[in-house]
Image (cartoon, rainbow, N blue to C red; front, top):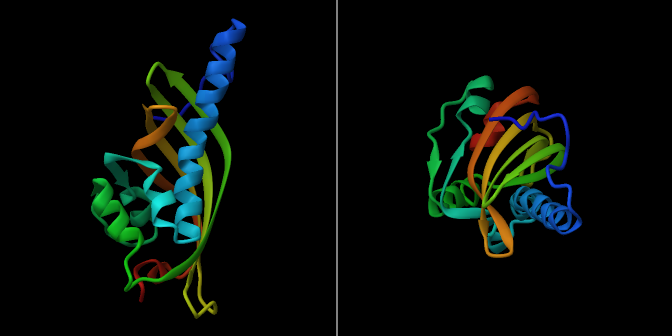
Length: 166
């Protein structure tokens, strides 16, 4: 699930290295489009990060903070959950420590993501999550999209009810 190989690039010939570097940038960009799209509430940018039948498994992270959620399956469901008008949040997502493995038209990405969640209009409460993300990505033309996103919590601080609009 996590990318743990001891080197960054598999390619050694210059054309292959350039292609792999471009692919790696595009794989990471899928995760960045998700985070920024959610943070600035740009539905089109957010949706561009996912394959139509994508799965978003937030259950391990939710369980760690005392919540129960189902796996989100499909772009419409993922979008509806994140753009729920009843749960308006101000968020910031910071992505770091990305590791990427390319295998043809498939890729794996492991990253740390720190996500701050504040109720819109009430920043007296918050939920700060430090999560480990595992992404399965697929090639979509010149870009990559996430086909599966798995999130596990490392630590958190604040009020978990912020995440569900309470």
